[in-house]
Image 1: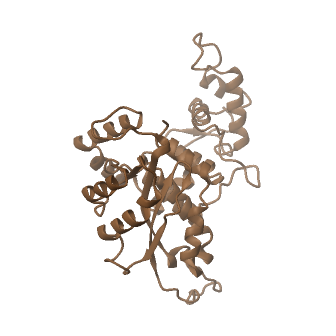
Image 2 (image 1 turned 90 degrees about the vertical axis):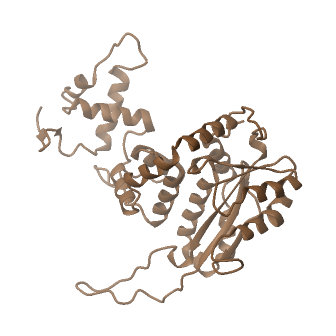
Image 3 (image 1 turned 90 degrees about the horizontal axis):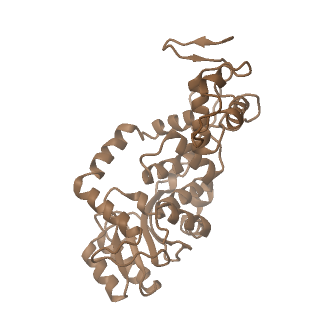
Length: 360
């Protein structure tokens, strides 16, 4: 093979073609027309090694296989070219990093290809797997941390609850649980926003000098928010308050129950099913007793299972928009943040509910 380089680990590559979008597109298109397809029983067509040896490609068979598998998994040849012959995916900015942290909390076992595809579909941004990998390391969302959470999640007791919850999602009658119907589900959760950290402070200085002034100091204010979502959009029951106001610092059981009983329950209909997580301030007996007065059922997802609560996806979208409009949020957070919350597209809410397994 001409113009082939061998690296120190024994691998081979063709310089200039490893991240060339047009080259990957030619390889995948040729495989679609002349390659061996797994769904064909006769096995006719060229193998990966045979395609790699053709004069127009001259690469390794494993390279062709990786390009084809990426196309079958994501529907993309590679990252799209930007301003040149070779692809130069942009570095993820602060709003995308916030969204990346939120979707990692929801789905802890996503591959890099899953991250790239999700960012492309949800945000319309084409990035690369190496860029996502660097962003995860920057956010300290390493594999070790994910494995630790997985070990806590998949204990025998919690795994049994997880399986029973999945069966309940599919319509199986579980003793003591209401019938799962998509139209009656209401998902609630909490999130916090620091007004001073909506965007990192930046400044300018001359070359070879130290930056000493980054602008006017803005005091840090942490705002706590409680929201509710259905398959048709966000409910107008959002409640926000700063730290140190009311009962304790942040969320507390009496404060949450005050919102639950006086704001949420009167706005729901009879037969509604409220789905929430197992936070310490969610006292199950008190919430179920209050829901019974309004003929509302309360269901708790298994521990360490935010992927079963689609409002986590909505929070990722909300924090992405907060980071985008950080100047307005800093100026008037108690008006701007509710505007962003109620601006979540209803179609996205329906899609997130379906993606978490609530299809009935």
